Length: 179
Image (cartoon, rainbow, N blue to C red; front, side, top):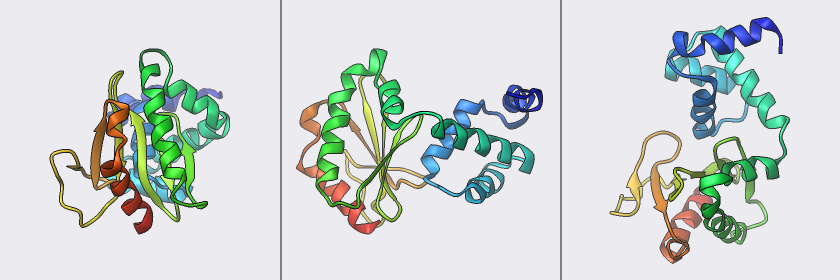
């Protein structure tokens, strides 16, 4: 890595309020794909200067290109989060049954589920909880389906395989159909 890039990364917390890893999480939740969209999102939505936004996006995109999908998922479910892997696998297996156009895209901290656009986001939120962000606009929140902000309109926590149930799959299917 060249000195200018390393300097930009080192100065991110001081100049933007977040580390590079924290910006990766912000970008993964945004569900954007194009470089210019990501830069505009960081500038407009987070007040990041053009230079820093461009640098963050360049690092974000090159990071995913350098790592295989399997490696990204393995890293997410390593160590204390290894017990969540069966929950992740159950969700992915069920969602793949929705259609041949389901696109599973692992990122560093999450896995994006896409059709023509992102309809859900799966991430190990802690060692004991899988968090699913689901985009089901117009759906009233419930005790389990919590309202959220950002690309995903709702969040659902999953702590056991029993919670990958018909109710959760209905919400995911609805999000898939809306995408």
